[in-house]
Image 1 (cartoon, rainbow, N blue to C red):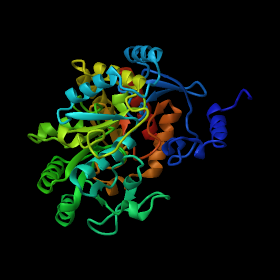
Image 2: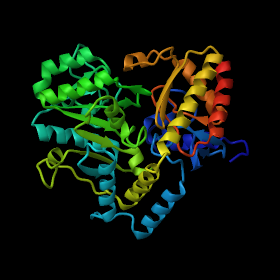
Image 3: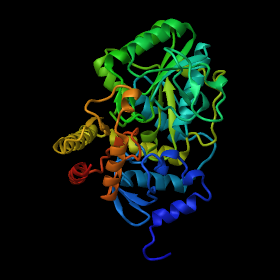
Image 4: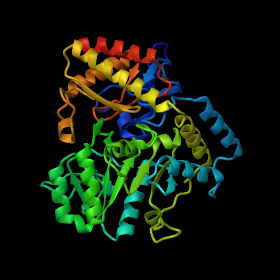
Length: 434
């Protein structure tokens, strides 16, 4: 290639000839912000280097799993040892038992857990299990919450209050989502009406306690408490999707954050991913023994996977969980994340740019708005052209955030205070140019 070739451009052009859109997951294509995606050459600590050899401070971290940063020595050692023992067996291993025991130890609401390979697989299996355990078909999800790309979950809200969803993807027949009820996040009135109308037919309510795919939006404590009360009252299961928040916002995951505010609070089932695999393809769903024993081979709800409990992935996940369980880990991570959010807010204020931000543990989000949104429709009011200029301004200066308005960001234990200060200084410069 010519000396002045942009290798990211060249790789993207090449990729589009053999991969739909040039990417294997849509948001990577930069379609929302324009421009060329960065093809990662390597990563270490808080950074990655793109195909041109340019270093970026990474606030995506593989969309959340890299809570220790890239290439943590203890994790690398565990994976290398596991690889030498074998890639996959299709048979049980002690290590998957150890990982299950660790998840149960760290999340008190979980008594039994099933390991799978992806968050989508975990979420769809949890819904099937909820239906099998309750003998009901309908379930509630919330607009702006993403639970993977299973057919029944690819829905948008219907035309009226407490109405059923319509497919948001070609290839999903309307009858597949007819039992999916889509409500507005944090809307107590809709929640009450939905249970009054359909409570006896509801298998479960699935929710991201802190949504990460409409950026960072929290479920309010009163809203979450009412979700728990109504599920209990009507015999539906409360399912927490903690694929993103699990072991990312706190050692006990987001449910422990709500348990501090709501005495005795716990979901009936939890869906996990990302951090529990440490960057390897691994996810899980778990809950009470009474619910989980409906799964095959004990019960009639079928779920299976050739690579479930993969020995290399479980080694990676176990090593990650052991590192983040060390005393003081989350205190330090939370403080570092808050310092980033506080600094960005101050930089935006100095430039008179509408901006608000929030964080929990190592997860954060910001909006080009004056006040934090509480649902998807409010998130949609964010100034998209301003965000695109902000994104590219940061990217050009070596700071990598999500290439879309609607994605949360992540700080790792590898981010130093110097990285945070460098990011804030770059952001200050970009805000001034907006």
